[in-house]
Image (cartoon, rainbow, N blue to C red):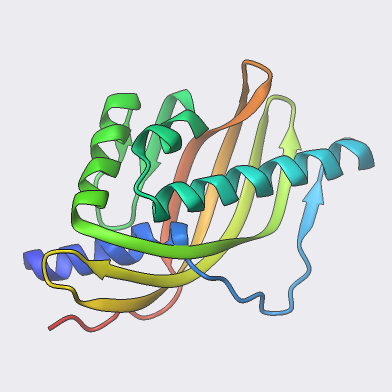
Length: 171
């Protein structure tokens, strides 16, 4: 059985991947798309969206984060059930921000545009603080974003992440 402390630690690590200070391991990022122009334009859009998402996490901006999501989003944090739909995604982020302080950065490694959908693979590292205890820890994650073109722009349609480093010890 997972204790509340372990669940919070694992969930924090999972969520925190979103806000991590990433160190590129020397891998060159790739973007695959129909044309070079579309590739460069899409890459800039995805990097900007993910940077805005990271800022929203650091600033605990639920409304700002929800603006980045599609009309029918799914958020799938590690060690937690998926949040399906806008209201469930809102509640998931409200819980995260009531529980954790996040700070970090993402690096885009590769992406592919396929019509009105695109996927982006990232990694992140950073720090989180458990608000109730003040305990801080480093975290690193790997993420997968599925974007959907909606109302003329890219929106996060599905988001999943997993820890890419051992879980921090929380006492």
